[in-house]
Image (cartoon, helix red, strand yellow):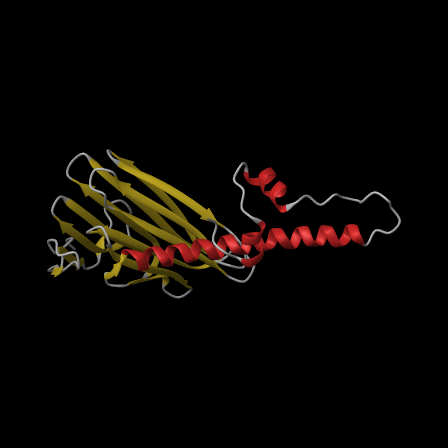
Length: 273
């Protein structure tokens, strides 16, 4: 069976800034045999964006054996001219005990710069955010990877990734992918078609994710400090307190370094200035 490609679906998405439209291509290959492992078959889906010197590609390859999808690879590439580019590789594997295992790696070259943040605060989904910025063009992208776990266990029942490509300075083209482990068919992959959003809206979605995680962690810190304070006040036999409760500022300086956040921000869950 040849690795034939369906006719790509080609269309244009116009930007509100009035610049040239973004050319979008979507295609999916019929199932084809993997060249490395016998009995393994693959399906590839791809979405590409192109405008001027900017090129972005979103590739998804599903590998299956005996009609069970056991592995999903997502390759996200963006290039500006010939000297600058970035690539994010995501690998998801079906596991009988933990449902979905995942690995993420980001590489950048030229004028691209990257940053990454990780949050883990059960029972909320684990969140990883990554941003890429090209100093030469002023464009870039950012994405989140959410891992929803089953109850309080380490079993990852669903993974969701949202990738937003920045175009025109104030607009993004976003692609969402959901991966769930189905005991009968293996990994189920759901890919939403590209959606055009304003940059402000995209930023607000990403910022709310991070603020929610940080607020949960801060509330946990306050809970610990209150418990220690209550225990100290209840010890009537000792003149000296069992444990001197540090101020929240002192606690944060001890745990997080020189960065200081006012106490009011912790109490009311506001954003840090």
